[in-house]
Image (cartoon, rainbow, N blue to C red; front, side, top):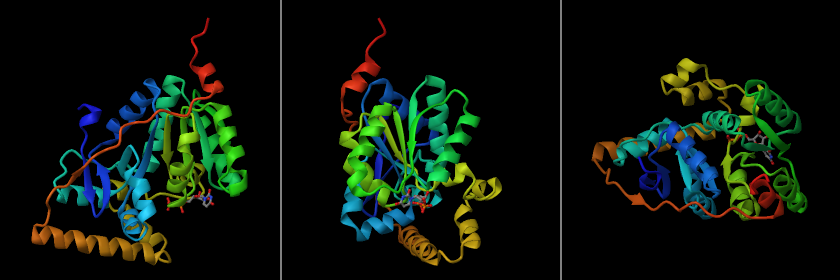
Length: 276
Ligand code: UDP
């Protein structure tokens, strides 16, 4: 399917794109090849609920070129609203796919976020998995606002094609919205706690739970103290059920913003210049 034809379905004010993993990887590949810039943000019931209370987060999400269905909640909600070709694209699985793409194409990546040790361990782990991957730079995620311009400069100096931002939500979404116009990178993905998972500091559910779409249940059993999150999920599930029973499933397609121009500076011109 033509990437421009991919539909974005509205779920309670937040869009979600009718994509699968292969399509999002293709979109990132095409964006880099065309030297444009896109952001990839994950949508799940928690973020949809948070966006209902936070107009800024809602606007930031909807301004993203790609809004991926991060889990089964977003997929079911989109399907109930008429979406057809939509599959789960967990942000934590997309990141390794993008690393594989980068390794294959020789694209450079930058890892921004998480605690310093986690950031380092995630980087080492990725280098072990993808020996060809060029990790052009990395930085932990505990940076004071006053130091942000220097960090942005440091990221651009590393000249990455892809920047992974792991600050948790909504911090990473806000950071991306605020700084993308100053970044030369082509693809910027918000990845939440993925560095922790890669580094082995946090565990995802075992594969069988993921396959059965029960990762949410596993997380509840593993972390009952995060009951607020489960309450949000339960409320979201209740709304879905009510929509399904009352057949209030009209499809609202909202526009997707086109990819933008990345920030251009000398280092990037040098990177793009053909070798003599
Ligand atoms: N984090 C960070 N800077 C901050 C706050 C959090 O780098 O100022 C990191 C934190 O160390 C962790 C990630 O952001 O690696 C948050 O992960 P979490 O699982 O909470 O995010 P979620 O996926 O739930 O949005």
